[in-house]
Image 1: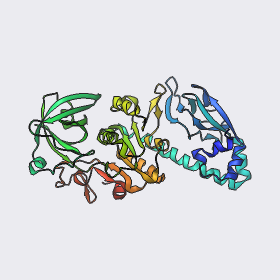
Image 2: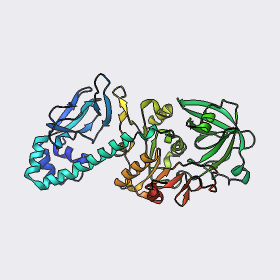
Image 3: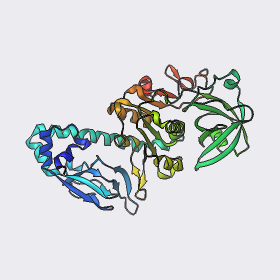
Length: 154
Length: 280
């Protein structure tokens, strides 16, 4: 049977994490199973826990009033669901909905932030895990805003 | 695949009469034409090349080949201007002129033995389709094959039936993503570079073939560099205003190169500096 620590260690976002830091991180983690249609997080609610998708798909979406929700990004295996837990006020800025049965690792955000404050080496290692993900998301959002296929040729 | 015959003076400067033998509407503004020579044999092509299609009385435009049969060239054309508008309205039986084929090809021979990653954005799938068909026809010569397709919205997906056939191919990974969609779309949403980590390939032994809007190609190439795919094995198909198609008029000049004869398929390591120049 796979241990939680081993499962976490196989996640893309933690690929460079040292074993001692992996053990610290595992203390904040637990497994989740979401059924299709179930929300991993809802806009405005406290971002107490964030998720790393292990299996299945989830939609990051925002619902304008009286309109269908707009899906901004589909998250799949290896993706980190949500970044609102990183910065105050620690509240979700979008909904994340399971599109199909989704298995995820949940990381207790307060637990992780506390360990980062206590052990700055661990905190720096975490920053190196999450910063590339944030930059990738920022670059993707910029490209999405450009609406590159709206031009006449593509 | 045999090398194409050299462009003769007549083939280079004077359009050869062709006839539309089939026309199929792909999207609201996009049509695929099968065209055959009115006399003589069809010239050989390489995947990635283009032809200059001439509508008498209207003008001539560079159109990538989206395929070929033994008897006909296949071109997928979007109605974006006077010439392409006229082309998309040609019925079966109509005459048109053709010069070509011209330009460089996707490196399907050089990439044998490697994993091949194909990234298409929007109508960029059309110039890649001959390469995809070639790779699948010679599947045993290549490592892992991945096809990542991006489109604006679900109704904008080009060749949906052929994509479904490709998906059924167990040794080709196919992923399709939309830049925007509502909750009624159950597929993937997000820009196409986000699909890269999901594809299974060995970066050190991978060749990437990319075609789409230039900003999308630059973003994809950057993401591939970040995954340690060598710049010299990232290939892009560029598009500029091509007129003569033989490197004489200078309309498609791109730094020291001409897209019509040094491209359209070019190596990223050779063009990356020029891609960053706004005026080009």
